[in-house]
Amino acid sequence: MRDPDPDLLNYATRLAQDAGQVALQYFRKPLDTEIKPDQSPVTVADKAVEDFVRARLMRDFPDDGIFGEEGGADGLARQRLWVIDPIDGTRSFLSGHPGFGFLLALLQDRVPKIGVVGMPAMGEVYAGMGNLALCNGLPIRVSGRQSLDDAMLYINEAEPMRAEQPAVFERLARAGATRRFAHDCYPHALLAAGHIDAVVDYNLQPYDFLPLCALIEAAGGVISDWHGAPLTLQSGGAVISAASPGLHAEILEITS
Image 1 (cartoon, rainbow, N blue to C red):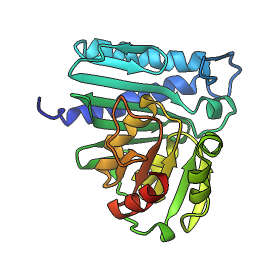
Image 2: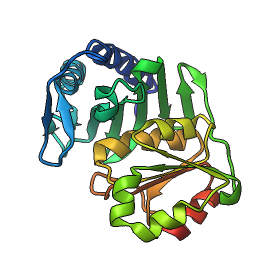
Image 3: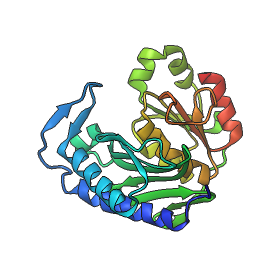
């Protein structure tokens, strides 16, 4: 099956913009919260955004599959599969922090081909396909940093990482020229745009990491699991994003 039509990147970008407007209708307003079995929160906003996106995709691409955080999978075995995280960072969203995102991927034959990170409260949409990566329509590129000693390193989800992978966490906490602790998708978008050099993430789900793949690769970066394997629907939740193969290899020495 041939690669997706380039017009699909524009479609996915517009969809992210529209989904962001739905999310902003609920942002910094009182919301009831439910706790899912995995102890993560979910609100009416998460459900409203995913329902909006699913309805749009079902109307425009009725033969494609959809896999969303809230609505589960429909047509998982189809050649084209859209993957949705309606609000990545619900805790940020609930606390009024603008760092929540919207994530969308298009997988073709199980391989990520389009990746979109929308940051509704910041008015930014990052999108990538092939060798084209954009933020709000302007080209972006990774920094190309080669050495971990010189790198700006982000450590995502430090709390579960420290509890479950203490040796890796301790090594990461001493790595890089400087470090920041963070959560959710925005550090990966910042990496694609060349602002930071590496992100080590943990405890993710497929709808958290699959939308990052095509974006980071289109911007010239490298993304994999902690052992260097490509990310798939079956991957675990441990992820590395890096601005160059050399930097990625150095981080793999810590995580694998």
